[in-house]
Amino acid sequence: MRATEPNKGGAHKPRLTLDSLVDTSAGRIVVRIGMLMAFLGAWQMAGNDTIGLLFPTFGRTLAAFWSLVSDGTLQLALLITNQTLVAGFALIVLIGVPIGVFTARVRLVDLIVSPYLNFLVAIPIIALIPVIQALLGLTFAARVAVVTLFGIPYVIINTAVAVRRVDPVLTEMATSFGASRWLIMRDIILPAAVPGIMAGIRIALGQALIGMVVAELTIVGAGVGSLIADLQGRFRVAPVLAVAVTIVLEGVLLMSIVEWIERRLGRWSQS
Image 1 (tube, rainbow, N blue to C red):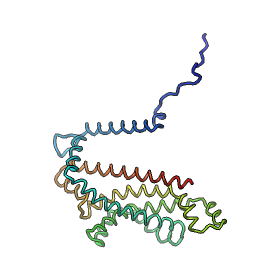
Image 2: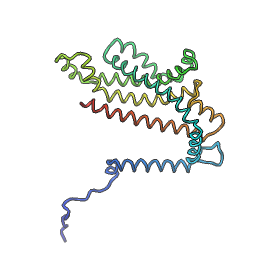
Image 3: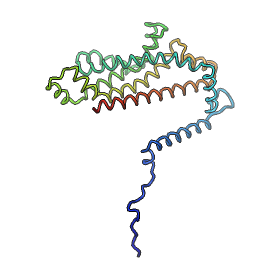
């Protein structure tokens, strides 16, 4: 029997596998584009353009999207609606993060805030919209309040949990070296709590997007919700789907921005 000859190259050639493909940036892009093309192809085959009331194909949805963009209807609706989203999300972060920190660090604040957090998480926020309407009317402030209530519990809870999980040895060591509470908060607690805080912000952003549409659909407005209600009332299925897909794409873009910010803050956290 002939002995197996050793590999003259000195090493085995690595095999191309799915794992090795997604380990590269180019491979990840190829996989994502391939999945997107497969999804769009399945959408095109599942759609039906024989009657306007049936589920539209991707081509008809794209044509409806272009029609809304060409006359400026979609841009105007998004501009109005995103004003509500920006204001509500700013309140979520500016109010939620400090409350979460104080909830974790001050026992009295925890006793006061926790019952209301449990209430907001347990109850569907849409059930509170009539109450918000009665208090604030059909105003911009009412829509902002709805967006804020949809997202703020998640920022407060995640921030509080992240702050509580900071290693107490770090804070005790800083205290023994004479560091003030402000320095401990700025240089130890907040950097260590960044991953948990950003996780809450990501969840809150998704909830805020839902609250944005719900507020526009239930409270009188001239934004995306009003546009969807108008198109739905005229049984224009393709434009409604085009608007819905636009909101989804906006959400994906905003999530990507938040993830980029999280990576930047992660360097501060690690330092």
